[in-house]
Length: 74
Image (cartoon, rainbow, N blue to C red; front, side):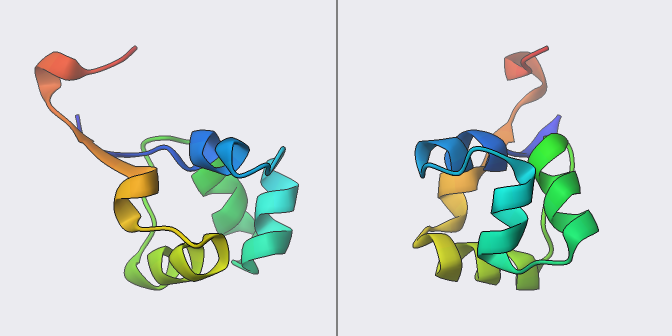
């Protein structure tokens, strides 16, 4: 599968209940924030990663994972 995002799970761990709140906190473009929140197969570009790290006091490994084909989760 490759790189997956776990932004929704990470956000909820940080107390962010929804895509809308994630968008408000990060200030990312609305469509980008909602797409990242809802679709694990979408991963952020470098600028978005930097914003997420800054706004949520995070490291990329907190919300991005690499998954081998054999480890894929349905």
